Length: 446
Image (tube, rainbow, N blue to C red; front, side):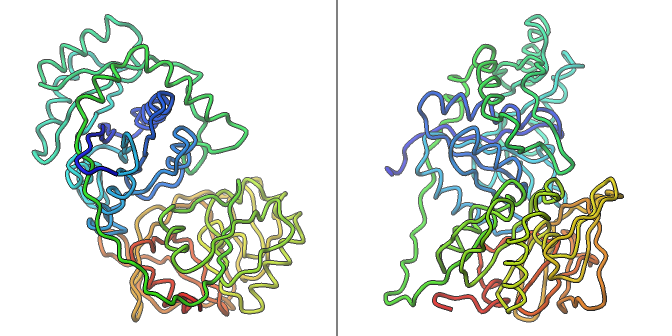
């Protein structure tokens, strides 16, 4: 693509969670896509669910940008790679604008500053009028490294209410770009890990309704004008050496129960092999493969269907039992265990390869970034689950140190049986696949 091309680029942020960031993001993605634009969405942080929703709104894969799990150089490279093929770039922030893993580390503010893109602030104004001036002024001036280009208000019932908010923006020195009225038919149902991605929920229809509402009360052309900037320069790509050995085959679980995969992790897989997708829910056979990747997701919502697919349970158990290389994360680990117990206390048999069982009876949130250090290996990721795990003495944990974002050790384990690695941790290896090579001896042709 032509360098120095101007396209709208902005980060959607808010003072706090539940202000309407995702609603506004989905509506804008859909509205701009309806104009025939290729809209590239990004998500700050390790979240899996919002990028899935982004894809449903824009039609293109959404990319995670995380400055804890990866370096700023990697984040900039990803942003340049995908933005150069787009007409517009929209980044959804995480929590409040300045909330990071530690102070501002990994926050939307840090990422907006790093990428030198403007911020659009979403403010929930349902119980606020002119007082919004103080809030907006604070967010504008707290950190000189960010550029607050405009404000969109959420849950504004009347134009007269909005007039007070325009006055607030004017006196705070930030442009008001419009508002969204409260509407029940644009709410996405929530689950315990976040917004629902259930295929029975018509996400596309919800996004269309948000887009229609936004176009009535938000000045989208002005938003695009305020945020247009040159696309970032692409970094030179290292060409693969000639004479590459035969590539390996990687089977990736992907369906309603297993959907938590980072797009760039999959791209890293493609560098060493052919990626084939399969469904533990619907398929009866496991594809022939050299590595099996059981990603996280919502297996606890499909327990009966998973437990009744006896052919797949046997195929996975046989593959792992024969020493097949396997990486299982969170929901994938739960699936490899002996059973999963639902919230009502009913137990459903699973693959039965790992001598452990998991339960949703007493949900307890386990959340946070994780960093694993082992001889010759160093990898980062995150943990996010409500289930608990009980294990037998037969399952051994890797000898390694696992820490949180502040460097304090945590009791999360990484289990290893034969050539199967399983943990509650969702790993990010896109920047440095040496983690996979270290665990499995993965390389081209291995």
